Length: 616
Ligand code: HEM
Ligand code: SF4
Image (cartoon, rainbow, N blue to C red):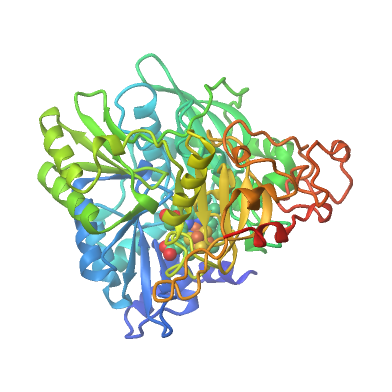
C-alpha cells in the first residue's frame, strides 16, 4: 500500500499523529503528521531564502465561491500581523492563505479562524477542495443559483468524521462550530442512494477511512462565464436556471486537471470531457456519485497517476458512462447549448442588481500587504463589507450602498486604485503561484518576479502596437497551481531562472496551451533580494522568432490557432527545420506520438539555443 494511503488509514479519520504532535515542543511536525495536517488546511514550510531551517505553517481557508464575510476577514487580517508574515494571499482557488505561522501558534490561529466562522477543513489533502463559483455577487440571472449550488456541493462533500477530529483539535470539540448541511443537502443525504455510493465506513460514509486517492476539485458556473476555468476541474458544472432563477439542471464536465511533472510523459494537464446534462434535482446525487466512483477506481498505488483525469484518460468516457449507473440512478442527457465562454474579471464598479454595488480591485499576484491591506481593513471595518476572492487572485468588495460609494473610491484613490486604473484589464494580466520562498516544491521564482515579467510583456506589446489584453500565467514548477496550461502564455518553472514556455491557450480558457520551449531563461533567481541581478536574457522578438520560425510576437496573442492534429502536442512549426506549415505526418500519427501527452515527441524537441542566444 502506498505510504500516504497507510497514513490515512491509521490516522483515525485524520486525527493522528497530528493530535499527539500538537502537544509536543518540537518546532515542526513529523512527515506522517504533515500528511494529515494537509487535510486540516495547512502545509508545513520553511523559508527557502534562509540557510537555517525555520519551520512555519501555511494555512489555507475554505471559502466556497470565494466568499469571505467581514468578521472573518478582519480576523484574518489581524492573525496575519500577529502570528504570520504580515500579508494575506488571495489564491487562484478563491480563498486566502496565511504564511509563516509557527507551529506553537497553530492552535490559536486555527481556533480563531473557526470561532470567526471560517474553516480550513479540507482546503488541502486527498479530498474535495474549495468549491469554486463566479465571485461576482450578482443578484440576477443564474448567478445566485450557481453560488447556492457551490455552497451545497461544499456542504455535501464535507467529511463527517474528519469534521469531528477537526473541531476536537482546534476548538476543543465545540460542536457549535460544525459546518451544517444546507436543507437541500439534508434532503439528498436522506434519499436512498445506490449501494455503491456508501464507502462501507459508517463514520465516514462518502469518503471511507482512506479518503480519496488524490485531491478533487469542483467548480460551478453559469453559461458564458468561465472565470472559474471550468475545464480544469475534476468536476465542472455549468448551471441552467428557469425564468425565476431556480436551478433547472447542469451541464457536467469530468476529468480536468492541471498538475504534471517535467520529464514524466505519463503525467499531463488535461481539460475535462463533457459528460452530459443532469436535471436540477439530480445534480447533487450526481456529484456524490462521481466522487464515490473516483474513490473506488482512482489509482491508490501511484499518487502521480491518481487524479480522476487519469481514470478518464486510461479507461475512456465509455467506461466512465458504463460505470456511473452503479453510483447514480438519474438521467444523463445530451449537453445543453452554452454561450461562448469568457474569462470574466469583474474589475471596477458594478451594480449587484439588488440596489447595492461592488468594486473589483486588481491585486498583483493576490498578495495583500502594505497600504492595500490597511485600506481593505479600514473599509471592511467601517462598512462591514463582504469580500469575494476571484480565481484571478483579485478581490471584490461587496454590498456597498450608493451613499458609501464616494468614500470607498476616495480611499481607493489614496492607494493608487483610481477608477480609471480598474475596469477590464487592457494590459498583460495574469496570475502567479507563490513559489519561492515558501513553497517546498518550487524549482524557481514565480510571484516575486511576476510584476517584472508582465512589465516586459507590456513593453513588447506596446512596441508591436498590440492593444488586446494578453493572459499570462506563471508557476515555479510544473504542478500548475496557477493553471498555466490554459493561458495564452504559460511560464512553468523548469530550472533555476528558467521556464517552460506554453503558448496557444485561449482567452476564454477553452483549450490547452502547448509546450514550445523547455528552458526559456527569464530571470537570475539565485541571490534574489540581496544580489538580484535582474534579467539575464529575456523575452524578446528575436528570441521568439528564433523558435523554429514562429513568425512574430503577435502570434502569442489573440486569434492564433495552432494547426496541429490532436495526435502530437508539438506545434508543427516547432521543429528544427523551422517548418511553418502543418506537417502531414500528424494526420496519420506514428506510434511515438502520444495522445494527450504534453511533451513534444523526440522529433520535435525545441531548440533551446534559440532562446538562450537571444539578446537580453
Ligand atoms: C499536482 C501537484 C500539486 C502539488 C504537490 C501542489 C502543492 C502546492 C503547495 C505546496 C502550495 C503552497 C505554496 C505556498 O503557499 O507557498 C500550493 C499552492 C496552491 N496550489 Fe497547488 N499543488 C499542486 C497542484 C495544483 C493544481 C493543479 C492547482 C490548481 C490548478 C493547485 C492550486 C493551488 C492553489 C490555488 C494554491 C494557492 C496559492 C496560489 O494562490 O496560487 N495546485 N500547491
Ligand atoms: S506551482 Fe509548484 S511552485 Fe507554484 S505553488 Fe504550486 S507547487 Fe509550489
